Length: 186
Image 1 (cartoon, rainbow, N blue to C red):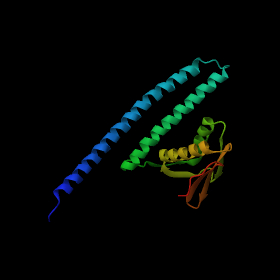
Image 2: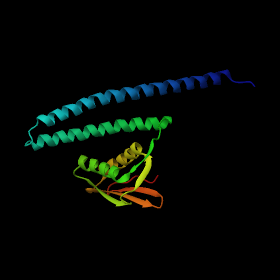
Image 3: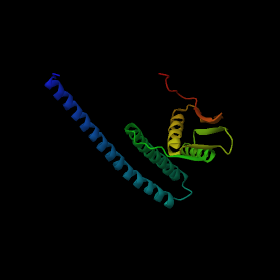
Image 4: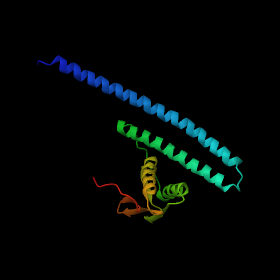
């Protein structure tokens, strides 16, 4: 079958450029993650040292340390989100399903966010049995709930975010509601 050599060469050049761009993206991503995680770890150690040496009576100083720790944690979460999305895009995210009690995970997550943002607390509503166990990838569940709760707190106009867990037959639903802006339907 006759072919156009110029067209074929152009397609090969485009493929090479795409492969090269993907390699550069991967190198840049790993460099960014590495270059951000190291200073964040150093910052965390420094903040812990400040906290150790700070006078307990100096509430304002302790408050600033806590703000800095919250910001550092948010940066670390952003880095984890970038890595998780990249793994999912490459199809390399391997689910690690396990069965575990749901209540301690929910309490841990909500407590973390309430501690992180004292001005906007999360009101947790349960509608599932106390001894309810769930089978899924625990880290992925924590990641998803953390993203949803983080966004709900960030965009809440009022001071409470409602987090509801409800058992519906053999399924479990999570819903998060705030009085802030919403995601457009489109």
